[in-house]
Image (cartoon, rainbow, N blue to C red; front, top):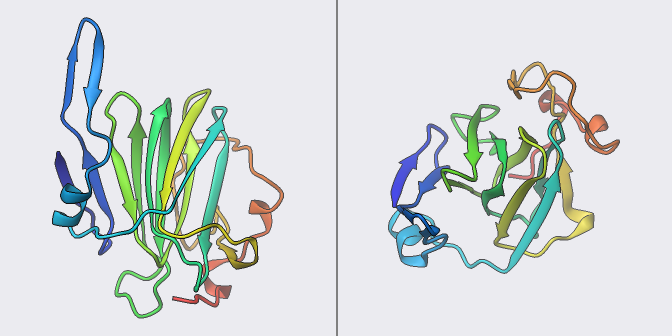
Amino acid sequence: MEIKHHALAGVVEFTPRVFGDARGAFFESFSERVMRDAGVDVNWVQDNQSRSMRGVLRGLHFQQPPYAQAKLVRVAQGRALDVVVDIRRESPTYGQHVAVELDATRYNMLYVPVGFAHGFAALEDDTLFLYKCSNYYQPSSEGGLLWNDPALNIRWQLTDPVISPKDQIQPLLKDLQSPF
């Protein structure tokens, strides 16, 4: 498995070796040993899945302590621009983001540590997005950032995104009282 540590401490991209032939393809989608050796030692407790049409933007979300979640995300069908924003107050990269294109044909995955807001934009119809989470979802613990905050300067690769009412009213980074 190819391992890439991104500029934001703790964010790791995994791209598995794919074995393909005329019948199709096979790859290892998760290995606790490989993850642990790359610095990702997490007890996964919940898997989630979403399906989105091209142009849907979901995020930027996080769970507040004590329900904070690390995530391992990938696309099983389609393509998505995955974005993580560092919201750890004492981090030298606070407010910075990393954007990674997740692609079902590359099978790449992104590890999102606790202390990051997360979102993605579906770049193809019927994008199937998979999340492995380190903690259970707790509605009262939801937090977020405004997806188009000018201070974040995220280039989402969409001209007219489809956004939920909840995601349209998230706070700006300057107004966020980060719990991390």
